[in-house]
Amino acid sequence: MNDEPGMRAQAVSVAMAPRDAVIAGIGRVFRHHRRVSAVLYVVGVLGVLSYPLLARRVFIDENAFLHGHGAIGFGADEALWAHENALKAEGVIDALGADADGNAIYDALTNFAANELDALGLDVSKREYPIEFDRRGRRRLGENAGDADSSVASRKTTHAVVRAVKSSGREGVVFATTIGASDTDGPNADAAAIGLGLAFVKYLATAKWLAKDFVWLVLDARPLGSSPGGSTHAAVHAADAWLREYYGDENAARLKSLDASKNKGARGDASAFARAGALQQAYVIEMPAGAAVDVVAVRPEGRNGALPNQDLLNTAVQLSRRAFPRAKVGLDLDPLDPIETRARVGRAGEAKVREGEKKNVALIRRLTSFLERIGVFCLGKSRAFAVRQFVGDLRRASVFAWRCARGVPTGAHAAFKSFALDAATLRLVAPLGSARDKAHFGPTTTRETFLKIGSLLEMLARGSNNLIEQLHHSMFYYVMTSDDAFLSIAEYVAPQAAVVA
Image 1 (spheres, rainbow, N blue to C red):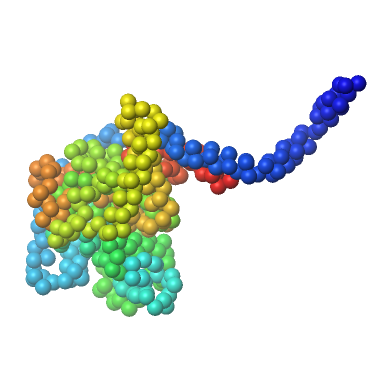
Image 2: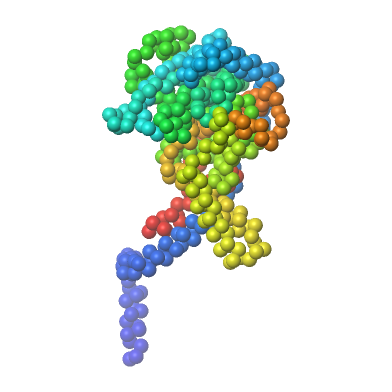
């Protein structure tokens, strides 16, 4: 008789259908939702803190990039072309006189580049576009028009197309050069960038391995607004307007008031716009120190946190290391050890680090020290190095995620990603202005530097040339914990979902 209630409960449990059991379980979760939420939150926080333990080594998913499997053709002769073109560009600047402003210098350099490209027999187009912006240099054409703090300016582009010789050229690759930025060594740095671009285009025009069309695009980076990022926003706007015309939105993109001589088309036809095949990848090259490279900062973050596929990012980092074995190459993820520490100076040689950035760095340093002390206390002093490495990876992952969450472009590549093109910016820098005299990097001549940069561009071009984008598989959602490690979406989403729950 005493076992009858237990037998009855067992019978009910056995008789309960699976659907009823699930509903009963959900009911218990809702009845104890506070405890469940607390447990999930703790689990999620522990999962986020364990990001460095979940990170994997980066890899190239697509073998078509063929790193190191092709002979480099950009040699001493091409480096000499680059040097000679740079000297010619400097002569064009000197001819303007000492009183020439940035606008006159920009026009002189782009006209020089267009004439040289036209002499090579390439399709060349020059355009000028209206840019609406606010005080910080942001916004694109037509966004929030009529605001009291908005202004309108124009930005120019010049581009040339090198046609494929091995195929019909149904796909295209863009190499973009920014000139006119405020955080450079001045006009001579822009002259070096123009000289290198002309030499690289001339080399591509004679190359026998082209299976895709290649576009060299000169972007106007003269700053918009008064913020330190005005040059970046200007280059993004110029690239965005160029892409809109490239894909057919000519009426909305082009500045209608310009005459035919300013909106020059392919082979002198003012109504034509030189196009390549369907654009697939883009590389933006910044040379703020001209032909002097001590640091290569690779920047992948685009609008609203959009990222290129990881193959392109890893390719840019690995090939930069191969081209500049003595330079510091990376994604600049660590605010406590910024990759451009010695390069954040302008023409006067003074650092351009704002007070807000200093406060953020101080806060990150205190938080890092706090976490390291906790780790050493829990694991012992013998594991101090491992704790520092762990905290450093967690800090770098947080910085990468924060940049993506902010959604602020870090280079002109952001415009290309908005049009479904994988793109990244490579910033080839060295100490600028008077700070260069105090720098401690290996001595190198201008021609040797041109040779290294040209070799890097050719390796990037060969990799994209071999790639069939329709068959390309790589990761688009990832968080970098260092230059050589990452978290895929499978590792970083689940802990965040647990925290939100």
